[in-house]
Image 1 (cartoon, rainbow, N blue to C red):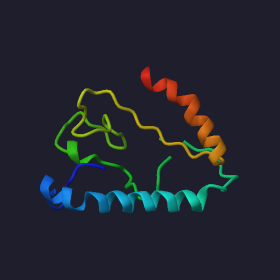
Image 2: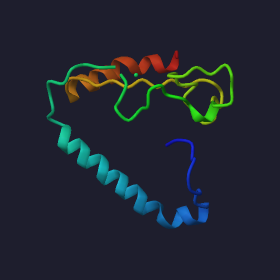
Image 3: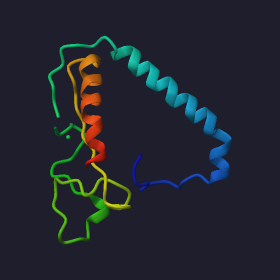
Image 4: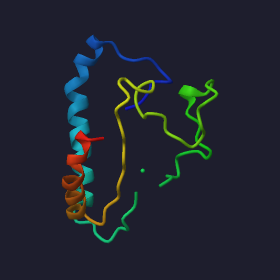
Length: 114
């Protein structure tokens, strides 16, 4: 999800009509990705690296008119910067599903602190 910058959002009445279809499509996609990668092993452990789709320098267009916003930074990573100012997103690439589950279990207690 992200900030809608193109197009128009659907009304609640429109969403209700297709909600189950969207839910099932997302579930099928998740299961397909899991099946393709569940036995994957040997990836290098990586971590928050620049992907090929992120422009450099990255400029957060939500804040393009603010003078104190720094390029190549994520600013509070939430809807219009904040909604309580308590979110953090960290992305890890683990060596395998087993290592990923271990990282998840080890890092989960930190979420209450951070």
